[in-house]
Length: 188
Ligand SMILES: O=C(O)CCC(=O)C(=O)O
Image 1 (spheres, rainbow, N blue to C red):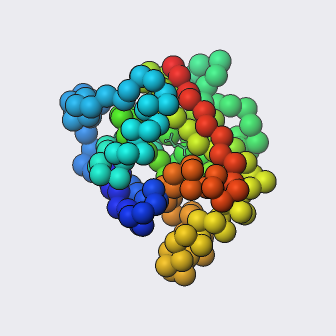
Image 2: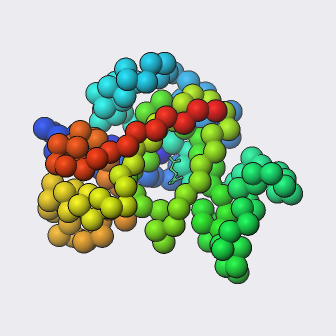
């Protein structure tokens, strides 16, 4: 579950805490989350998202240790990508194994770089479009500086607070400070 609190009322800058809930079935997740739907038009959806996300407590079945792909599948098997990670003997959940995400309208994952600064691969099995924001690695330091300046208390508590995966910043805040943001809409 994602719990939102606005860091600064005048800016779209949020603390999003992922909180563990009791395990639930996919059926009950569906029942709990089928009340509101995203607008189909991407631009409207983006506007509505930023207008309402701060007041919402969206459920997100995030970081579920599972995969819908058959473990022996030879094509596009996220359990077996044939990368250098195959050499890692230890299991590192979400790194050497895939994570599964069950989302709904307003489900959000905070800004982050991937574990160990690795690349990430994401496959949308089913459902509505998923929207991504990204900042190129070349602007990574600047991103950290800008967000740290906007959140001095967080930065003082921990210089690596962005690693806590709990900060949600609207793209226009970054763009207004010279950080280009790329938008991608992922479909099934
Ligand atoms: O799918 C998400 O919401 C976040 C997952 C993630 O961290 C990633 O794939 O990079």
